Length: 437
Image (cartoon, rainbow, N blue to C red):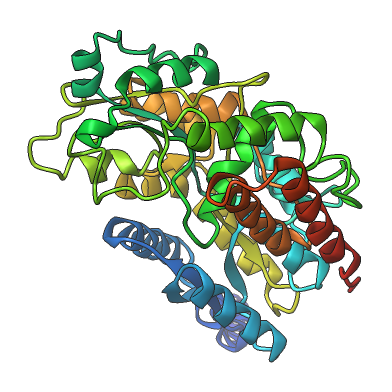
């Protein structure tokens, strides 16, 4: 009887304990059900179909691995429309958590206090050794990293093989480490140039367009001749954009139009594809565009060589990169997305879909076509010889001044010294107007 009583008491105690622990368990919230759900607004530039699809798939992959984070992605056409929308939203206090920034405009947003410094994030988890130094410099303002890149850009010399054959000119080397000099390009342009047949020898830097294109394509000419646009400390353009090196670059450029006549201000539609233009400087994205022209085949009708050099071998870099708003309520979650999208996995997915140039060494190594002619030219130039446009809040003024400067000397025939001094004055006025946050 005592044994049964003991057993009953033990079972009673066990039952009470079980009931107690059951009550604790039932009161404890399920981790997955109560994990905080976060929605992040992501404002980006609108691109072509492949570019947009790449972003869609990167977002889908991220959300699949982060069920507690929802990415509300919104897109706008790049250029003035996008910049106007973004700046209007920021001025109104409607900060997207994550935003795409055209890297030359980085300092404008960082200086205004709109961007969160990602320096600690990038240095701890961003694997910055996987990003070329020249590219990283363009993402850094006042020694802190503010943007993370997915893809990059580069330009090269495209040449019409049909016109080269007609003139008996050997095709240039495709070795990224062995570009022609601008003097060599000039001599070839003289041989190809044929006004009687409306054949133009060379388009040195994408004619005379609007937007950011003129600065992107023309600033390298200054760098190649040993010039800079502004001082290293970003305080003045005087003595830099109007230096003797800059004047030499500008005179060479002007002479292509006025002295040698191998470049033309007015060109017919699609002159390169119709055998009316011997050489032109284009971006990596032009390869697929040109191949859409029936009967105009890479390796048969046109070829690609490294961007010509002057005193220096240098090409422009930069592109759309991701930043985090300084006003976001969810900096950790925003970084998780930026880390994924710009890291190895996300960037590899993006490049595979978009066909753009990767910003990371590791991603470039994983695509055989990026290590073979002609795309290896763009990749290796970007990795080894690229330079970022000046990182300053006054960059929009600099971009406009560069456009006006090259129009003045190449289109209007203005004295290069006078034009350069005017450009220096414009830029200095912009530098003086920089406001501290």
